[in-house]
Amino acid sequence: MSQFSFVVRMERTSQPREWLESWAALYPGTDDLEYHRLIARHESLAAADFEEIGQWKDGAGAEKDGEWKKNGRWKPNVASVAYEIWMKAAAELPKCPNENRAADVTDFLNDWSNKEYTDPKPKHFGLSRATTLLHFISGGRFPIFDSRVRNAMARLLLNSSFPNTVRCYQESYCLRFSELAALCGAEDVRELDKALFSLDAFSK
Image: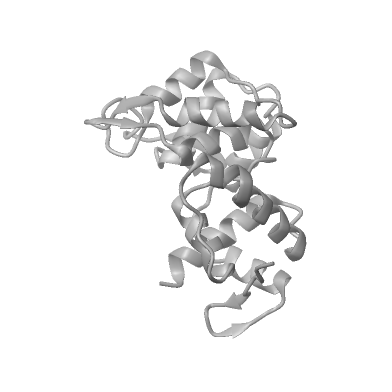
């Protein structure tokens, strides 16, 4: 079995809990209130909530004075904002697939990641956004799978790689994420997600 290599600021090894707290503290965002509000509502998300998930993911909103505010990027044909597909989610109100049926999760991720939108050229919604959608509608039970956390996990697991595929996400990354959360004593998966993000962002 591969061994995790826990390093604090790339200077020395550490215990898993110390590693988690040190890297999570470096996370640059201030979006925890919105994140936890949406997670708490995962069984009854409304159309406006799906819009805010999209704004949260695509950097088209921010917390201000304790409230979530969208910004001018939240509209069609804006680079790096998949507005059309997030609005489709707001209209359809997707529910979490059966977690006990891997094929259902696969179908969900393939369906959403392959949806096309204009950016201003045609693009796909992508697996990072599809897993973000799955993360919120599952109440955080499925981790988000973006480039930063993939790079960070590969760094932790020496001689490993995590291709940006549905298969890798289901068969490898989710298992490793759960293993890492247990090792670090991460009761809040958001803390682990922030630590992984920061590890990739600040350890180049």
